[in-house]
Image (cartoon, rainbow, N blue to C red; front, side):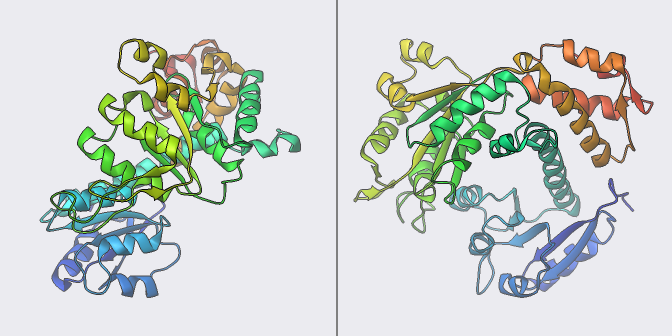
Length: 397
């Protein structure tokens, strides 16, 4: 029987109308101590009976009454979801991605494939919690005057100056361009701007422009009408429509294909869009925040980025300082991250020696906070003793 990596059992709901498939999944997962599984014969059954503390839902798509995608919409992001289907199509994959589904499994698959997917969700959530806490965790030592900083550790002058600028930007509807090296936390600043704006009660929608294939990016942003392309069996809203009234965060904007930039410029200027395959303009009310680690002016000179789009997006530029200019934050981030990783991996309590803390403070972190987190995770796992020394950090690897 596989050993559970943590004491906590992941609470999983299996939603499958085929009784044979449902029972076989229940039986297979019963061999794994790390999961606590409940099964339901339909999405409607799950909505009625599923406990509030459920953490992960594994659901079929084709089910009577309420199919898997409609079920995911109904859940509105409250739970992590893995979709399983015997009829995978591009349309369904796009819709699953839009709904935030964590994985998309095509039947038939073996039990180990599902277990691996479930473990990935669990472990990614744990690591993301560490990263968020490292950058955003509430610091009891921060004064009440800094509570409005949404939990950032405003313990360095460089960070506080940037937060002050971000808060000024948040009070307007002007487009914001966040620049900074990889790993400095650009999306956290985008969320900070949204959370301190008049739009905070509406949606914050994020998309990484580098992560979406060019042939899918247009339909992802602007949606599509039924019949617009093969597999477009129903009309779907794009991210602009889903963010209506709120904020749309365009991460890695410098990676947007030049051929798609004119439409983005027009949508921003005119505040209206036309879905792929559509024939009418739809009014939108969206605040745009972008981020990049590229030199966009250089891209403009090279003909890789439109100059008019650049100036439309760059109304308020915010440059996030690298971690090497925010040394006062390193020790707190490191110690909090160490606690989280020790808990995640059942390592007991560990702490840093004075020479380890000095080594952490002396390093320049070309990978910024992301690299710091990686160093702490590695040292927590590989150190033999409860005290982590400088040699355990393996800095620069």
